[in-house]
Image (cartoon, rainbow, N blue to C red; front, side, top):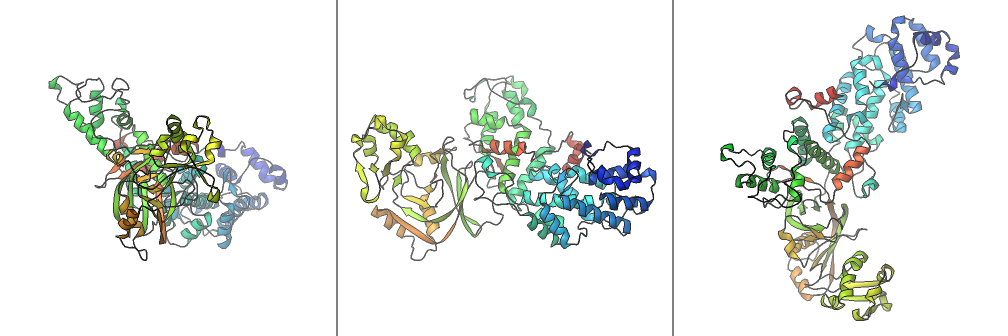
Length: 618
């Protein structure tokens, strides 16, 4: 145990304290706390003080101590049948709840703790069996991407090893505080959303402490209820299994990393490099040494590279460029951290998705339209460039706009359209973009050739609207999905369908371009009174901008998950296109919010023994 609980007092000090109990208030200015006195009494129980003296000292000092009840009844429960033990327990619990802490450990929610035990008249909640189950749950919390020490793992384990009855109230309260912390961390967003430029408005918030306590006290198996507070879906379970698997591997290929292949150029089949043998080790490719060309990038190795690229959502061309090398050079620990980041984000989504929704995964660049738990449409999308990122958030779909116009936001006006207009104002005319000053009856359409584009400032540009008319030339194509949000990001058609043929599709200015916009428009409008599928072509052919509202809005999610399952149920390690995993992991690491077991030997730890490996490493 950490020496933060050690006391600078010897046996003589204890005797003085016991003999001069009337002067205890002068002594209370010291650093003794509940947990410290408990350890002190246990350490010097060889003094064999009368039980009456101990009780008297407890009553006067107001400290928590533990008698030699363990020797008298080693299998006693937290409540105990011994009256002395009951008194010790109640004094201990009362004092700790009053202060809202136990030794140096502050309770996560002292009011919830006080109310919980007040309702129980301070009777214990945890029995011996449940305490053991809780310790096991905490030890395994790393498989959720958590840190067991955040839930008092070491303190609870040491108390349990000292005998269940020996710690009484301290163990009871630590278990309850650990349950609150654990239940909150697995049930929603546990970090400050501002730290990753997000908002709590969009994501699942954790249970309150009161809710956690109500749920575990309403069941016969509180630990099982805590387990159910985490996501239960297939992907989350697969991520947990992958984390355990990675923790047990020897990472046999880490010693050959990183590979560079001679610099920044694209290494292609047929070339020669000293890194080729390391590449084969990394991919598990065998090579016939009798061929005498170990450094030659042969077809067999290139085929393995293409397979690797397909599995990681990369262009399967067999060329070792920067993106492929970045993924190939990921170490075992880096992969574990990628799993942690994805477990974290999975907990931000509501555990019960609605019957109907749209979902876009930015790193995967795929959209799903889901109805009654079944994927009706899956399609490629184009998302924002790394310097014009698509935000991850939740919105409500309220309808469809056909033949939309497009009003350029200020950033695009300044960075894209202004340079074009400065070069040739006719560019705006050719693209069907009108320049408008003012609004309503005061709106004035300007001749692009009459505007002083050369001296245009951000302030002046902000006073102008640049509106592109409807039509095939329009940046939004013929369809825009209405989904109001503060980022002005939405799903739409495009006049650049060629980008959908690429594996990496990060080319927009932040909005999401749909490869099959009509299917999504029909999906949105389905079930709306008066709507027929034939209405789509009829309205589009008019060329007139038309807004269509739906009777029942439903959610659209834009998420950032760099791991997903392919059609065969295999986990894919995708690219961190915006480096958001890196940002999230930095925040988590700063708070010591996750940890991994130190598995020193695969054979010693054994598959499925990660819990024991964690315990032995700490």
